[in-house]
Length: 86
Image (cartoon, rainbow, N blue to C red):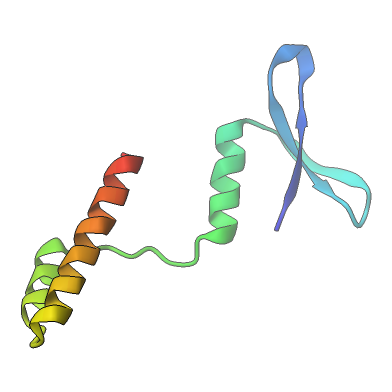
């Protein structure tokens, strides 16, 4: 994973990639948004699209009622967690 140092010229935050093995900086000064985009690019492996109606259909197909209720509760919990981040 890339390492960055925060550089503050004139009171404004920028970031620059730092190579510890070579003890030197690489690339240009970056904004916080640029660094976030690069870090996400490094760590996010897949994008998963969730089809709400397909999830609901799958839950309805669970034969055991207790299992179905557990799954429904878990999906509702995940929806609440997502709402916290919106």
